[in-house]
Amino acid sequence: MAMHMPIRVGVIGAGFIGPTHIESLRRLGYVSVDALVGRDQASAERKAAGLFIPKAYGNYGDLIADSAIDAIHICSPNREHYPAAKAALAAGKHVICEKPLGMTSQESAELVSIAEASKLVHAVTFNIRFYPLIQQMRTMIQRGDLGAIYMVHGGFWQDWLLLDTDYNWRVESEHGGALRAVGDIGSHWIDLAQFITGLSVHRVLADLATFLPVRQKPDRALDTFSTGDVPRTPQAMDTEDAASVILRLGEHTRGLMQVSQVSAGRKCRLAIEVNGSRGSLAWDAERPNELWIGHRDRPNELLIKDPALMDEPARSIARYPGGHAEGFPDSHTAINRAIYDYIRAGGYNSGTSPAFPTFVDGHRENLIADAVLESARDSRWISVDVPPINP
Image 1 (cartoon, rainbow, N blue to C red):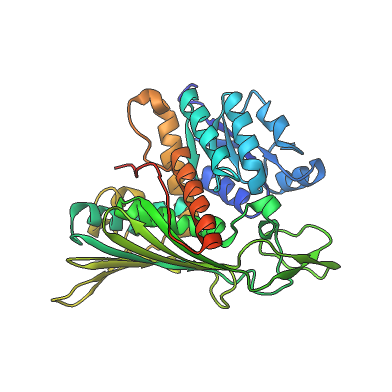
Image 2: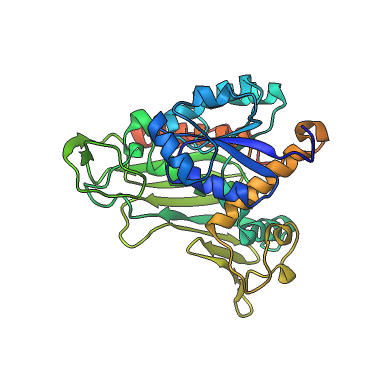
């Protein structure tokens, strides 16, 4: 494509995360969001008009067939990720997919194979990697500031499914997959633990809990995070509300993750701490511009996000000077900037490796999810063979 022309994008999914992608893409300046897919034609047209997007489609097949579109963002329910990604790659489109990459590791493995053979750019939106202070953590650990890594621990807690009247397609395995809390938010934490430490998960011991075995399903679809006074029908649950997972990473590092979507008062708290032989680091998504640095022999430190005080590549991820907070929307802009700068540079023909999570990273999470399910079912440690983390 001519470099003076904008990259033309179509987005599948008009719920919560689709408009998040759209906003972040528009901030890049050289990407044009030209089409949106909704749950049906009427919904798509209504949402597209509200977002000032010229084209609206009631199904993703019509979008993928649109020859004017260069790249596809898949932000729809999980069950559509695999078929939409496969069709988009076959049509010669770059693909940016929300997690999970597929409903099963068989699906994600096939997508990796197709994507790598196509030489098209492919990415999975593990956007939390792109908070500036997460990049700083990774840089400090790679440099050896923490010494040998002993432990990585923390979790991801929300309360948006605390009540039995809280309902979303994600609670049904048919639409979201066999794992809900682990697959939806735990996958972000596990990806982050591996990205920060550079160590791959190779064993898991998992315990899953469904505290609300029956939920009250609304008789019509509601948007994510929304509630409504609508008629409801009791629905038995086959996915977990919370989980605790013990992890082994690399040769010696121990990990511990807890995830929950029923923790009152916690809206979107991802917290991660890494302990090493020389020091510790801790970060909390509800306070994303603070990095705690722990010491044994001198006072602890608190680094407030400031490019002037940070290392590369963290400095390049931060877009605003010290004192100017960056958060969730900025992380999406940052990951999309990395993806689309790569596309503009020629993608895999540029001779460089992607600086963002690819389908390989999405497949790694599916393999770990398989092990978590097996471990919880059998109450034992399960080994998992995953691709290494990119250096």
